[in-house]
Image (cartoon, rainbow, N blue to C red; front, side, top):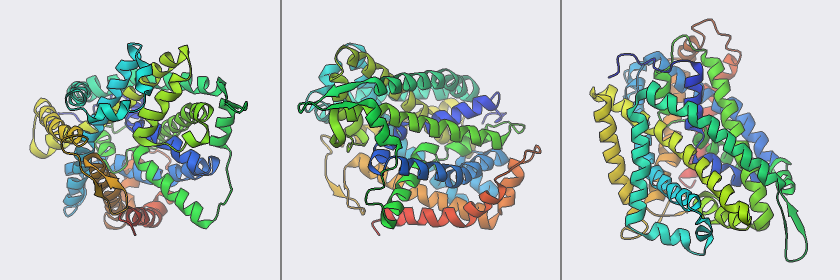
Length: 462
């Protein structure tokens, strides 16, 4: 175990690392789709309110638990209360389950980035290209390994020389790429076969202006649940990541200020992702094209959009997949660090051994994910009615079941067992003014557990 867990050199290092963790594939392929589907500005307003209340409470609690205990997610909960060890185990299992399929998807991103980098971007827009690629055996596994090795190399460097240094370089680049592509998306236009002209600015209006057509209580509740689910993807809640990073946080860091900065980074990047994706898809694919999300949006719809941009398409596509690769790596690094720190604290391993063990487990499980589209392919209906394969089952178990359970447990532990004062004292230990203290207490005790239970019940099909 590292002798000094306060390894982030300053507040900026911590914020960039935590924000880098938050900026992942969920922001890029899920946020724009939900925003477009759920009434544009209506979704944005609800998401922002939840980020500043629901998300704020859970992020603050997890970071404070990490800094107070100076432990990884596996051991932090038990240190907070002797009977909370099961929460720690689940908080460690979640990133262990997500990381293999996340790295498999990261391998897909590597493949597409290389295609655009070598000038072969148009091939990715051909009918069946994505399906043919993931149905292969050798190449997806090789790309998985490339992505995983890159992740391991950064985590192997430790917190200050690996994660923090990487985040300080990549986050500004990622932000620059997002802004460049977003601005470009707003300037493009396309003349349809019927003579009508669609512009990027029209796509932006769809994203930001509230569409209240058919809005009733049921629609608002549905949008609320979608926005709440998106927060898990966006803010790295219940993955053990924020506890692990909190354990490396200096005691003299302004935790309140750090949480505010993470909120700004995450919400800003998520919104820019919408500005980057929605106008471009609308211009070239119309409103029908905006119905795509997940892998279909990123690996099928967007390559077709880039292909229709002419000469600029290969450049913009290359920048886009470089940006996606940066975002994917920052998130995979944070997930692996959550697992590695748990191995180090729970089993007294050295960092190198913990990284190799975590990497080995991730690779073997990741190979199964890759084979799930060919030799191990099957169809299974999930409790929520969705048809699933290996990747989908792992995603469902981790995101839809375990993450709400861990968050509910965290709310009960902090809100009712050890008491909100445990977190409040940690947050304000240096005399910081915790202005949202009352809001934190209300959210962690009453509102968040109820909302999380609704999310869980929806996931299991009730």
